[in-house]
Length: 91
Image (cartoon, rainbow, N blue to C red):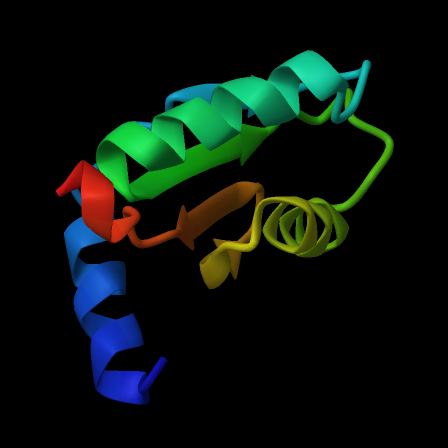
């Protein structure tokens, strides 16, 4: 992904509302499945890491992106933005 593409996605993400919150239980299998489904539907999503979570937002972003083959767009404070392009057959 180029810097211009990433910047365009960051701009789009400014208006997004976080659709998942990761709390004290951390990143579970059910949470990953939900994020995977959201990426299939929306491509670009925003998540929030609550203060009660033991892991850092950066670590969670890396874990999610590795597990779901997604691109990290932005990780600022407790907000994470990730992107994964829809498969061709779903377009």
